[in-house]
Image 1 (spheres, one colour):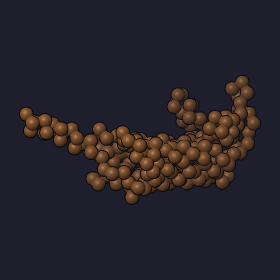
Image 2: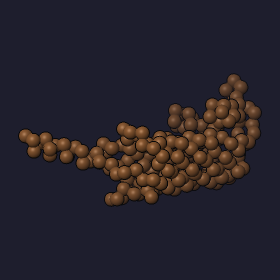
Image 3: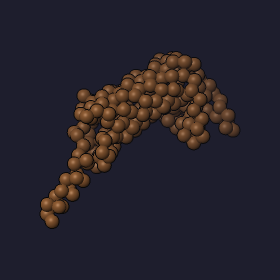
Image 4: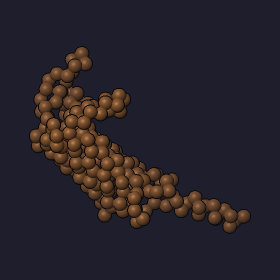
Length: 192
């Protein structure tokens, strides 16, 4: 009986074993960008690309919270091309959850922090009766990034990613109702 329990426990626990957190990760990703707001994209399916974006993110493991959760810092640079041409620099904090029960190591992360644009597009920074008003440019806005990463190599150092990137006024923190746009793309992540 004891051998049977040991065999069952090892079959359950071996797939749950997750490698130690890397100190650094780098992610290169790209995809279509849109001036549509996040709510228009996710609640109404209105993804009307007017640009393309490529991003390079460097993440640093800061602290293991426990239960598969880790605090991470992120720095990234993005470049938009198309109807909107500009570069952004961002620094953020994030929470990553390692999905240990999966046979293939995977994680999901959410980041946010300030973002600066070198030549920001003209956007609406307010509304009246549901219509955009008060157009202008904002170099500093808040960015939100989300990432799903799934291991694609035997040593689990390479991951395929799906990434979401968004810049806005953060509910009035940087600007009232400012919503510069979003990007949904794919990429590759490397652990160092």
